Image (cartoon, rainbow, N blue to C red; front, side, top):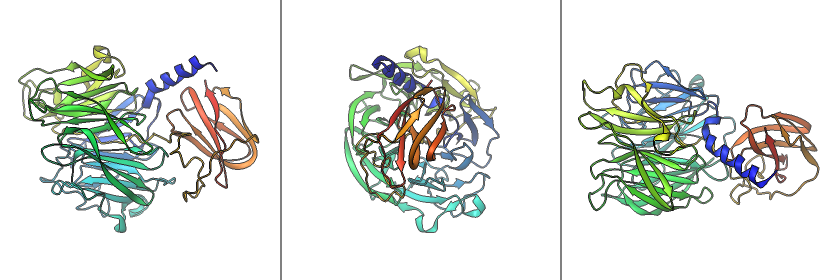
Length: 493
């Protein structure tokens, strides 16, 4: 295969991003005044509104790998798939009034190393002491509806109080999670706190300087492949310290990050609030909370440069809310309607950026892209999701699990060349066969490092990638003793 074809293929896959994936952990969105969407590759379906749910800010959800709703939260409460309070979840979050005012106040994470999908971690910020707490959900409790484990309930993640920016990204081993939040130091902080969540819980945490002082308000997100982080900060001190968006590089191996650039909002009064990366990671979109402006920012010659995508004009009682990418490759924009107004129909819709990889007006922003069914939205949040599909950095020094023993005891086995196995054909429409006398686990990863297939192998094993998008894939064979060969490349046409 030529070098040109390889680079072109990588570029195409990066541009497709999550749009090539089906339903999964982020299939259900529950937000605001109980609005409920179910996503697939074709876009969202509007489901009946959940009457007893309200999330001003900080809401989150999680579904199982097949896209079935598991749990959702407004920080203060957690509900199961039957829309009932989750067992043993009372008083987990503290809000005043009974909903959270934290921009990214909660987050569900599949538990590291849980190949049976039995456990889910729940992170929640406390509105009063501004600390972060972790609880562990066992899906087998309460007749399969799940419940908080008594011995792992509301555990303090770290000692320091934090601001409202919270998210997580996979460690380079494809199993653990880096949990990241801005440290709360008033009026502004240049530090983030980072913890590593492993199968045993939080292994350690540390504070890192970011090179840029930002206010505690706003949101935090990662690019689709996890190598960049963006934070929107609000309520800056004008004119010396306006609200800004900051862009960082992020190392998934060691959790270190470096400031690339900052971009102040064009006017001092609006507060930067929501932030989202385009699927290809080349553009950042951010909202402002006071004038409901929507901007696109691109990195040009090492500097962030923005362009105005949308402004509703004066006199409309709106506030810019969160931004979130869907599985169809589009980005959804929340308008928060504060006060009744005969001119205000925005609160009945989510805006939709239809082509977020493209520059300026070519991104095709639809102001009234998704009708919410006639109810007004008075919440600023969209669910807080991590990138649940991101896998290991295959072949990197921190990819310690691909060649690790199957019991995950931490015994490292360096990959070694083997000549006793083969995959054929190397190029096909999706059907392949692995042949080897060595029994073990057949594993396939895409170019993002995401594990797309795992199955047991003995002698001759056919495997099927027809459900995966066209592209280059890496096939591994991990023996029962934990030793793994170097990967072989195959092409899905």
